[in-house]
Structure formats: C-alpha cells, structure tokens
Amino acid sequence: MISLKHLLFSFFVLLFMKCKTVNEKIPVSDSEFKVETISKKSAISDTTFVSLKAMSTDFVFDMKYATNDNFLKQAVYDCPECYLRQKTVVALIEANKEFISLGYRIKIFDCYRPLSIQKKMWKIVPNPVYVADPTKGSIHNRGCAVDITLVDATGKELDMGTPFDFFGEASSHNYTNVTDEVKKNRQLLKDVMLKHNFKSFDSEWWHYNLNGGNLEKLANFNWECN
Image (cartoon, rainbow, N blue to C red; front, side):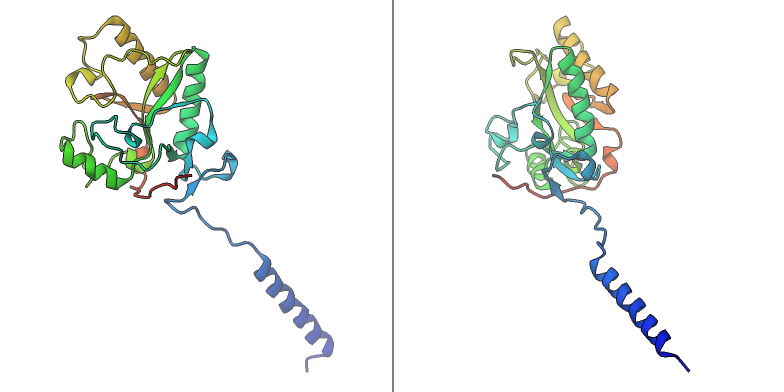
C-alpha cells in the first residue's frame, strides 16, 4: 500500500518536471535563410546571413545593382544593401584590415544576390564564363562571394585595367596586355584575398569566392529596406 508520504513525494516530482519543461528554452537552429543585422559576432551562426554594414564601418560601398550603372542597365535591387554569410563577413573584415594597414580599403560592388536576379542576368548574358547558370547557381546566391576593388586613402579606385562587369578578355587574371600598374594592383588584391581564405575567379579580376562557399544552399530572399 502506497503511503501518503510517497504520494506527496511523487506529486512534487511531477510538479517540478512540469515547471522545468514549461520554462526551459528550446534551442532553435538558425533558418538557412535567416537574416540578422546584429553586430555581436559570437551570437551568430557562421552560416547565417548578416549585414556587412552592421558588422563594420571600414568598407566603401558602391552597390552597382541598386543603380542603373551595371550591365543590366537597370536597378534590380530595391536598396543598396550588402548581405553575406557570417563566415564570409569575418574573412572579408580580416582581409580589409590588412588592406587598411597598407593604405587601402575594400570597395564593395556586390554581395549576396537573390537567385531571381541571377535568372535575369542569365537572360541577358547566357554565357557561363561571365554569368553563372541559375540552374546551378552562383556563389553569390549562396552568400559566399563578393565583387570588389580597392580604393586609396582619398577614396580613388586603383586602376584595374577594366571597369567592373566588363565582359571581355581584358578582365581575366590571365590577361597580360595591361600596364605594370594594373598588374601590380590586381596582384595586390589577389594576394591578400587568397591569404584570407578566398579564391579568385579567372575571368573576373573583381570576383572572389570564400573557400567552401559552393557547399552552401542557394537562397532567394530579398532583404528589407529601411
């Protein structure tokens, strides 16, 4: 026969377990396409999308696809924002710190790109040498690629031989018919970016992918404009 003491003990054990279950925080994994603008790096998963502007004020931004100054000849972004995976942001900030120590800084042309925009680009230039086939997706669509150049202390862009998004042989890292200054500038950009876990894209001097970025999933969200 169960004693009153045992019954009371069982009742309080059950009550304690119920309260613990109600009050305990259930861990929630980051959504693959979750967007964060907070600046506390330790609170963010390295695959979460974050705003580069919220993480660092040391970059120069010229988001070409939020203007008409691009090969599409139209603005395809609602506002000039730069989102990337957290791990891409961390590597990019470290690269920029080195450039700053040398008297330069990174100027950003493009960051994460929604897959819908990739499809528009493909319709205009269906050439995989210059535009990623949207059926496979770009590293831009995965939040692990950036289009960049360098500016000096006055904000002037270094001479890279061609404009951004110039679809021609002269944009290639392997193209040698450029001035010594252009060769030096391209090599500087490449050397520092490779040192900080990026790799270059042969046909575009401005394009850099984070190593392993091709393993991330494609994304097609559009950020909110303030």
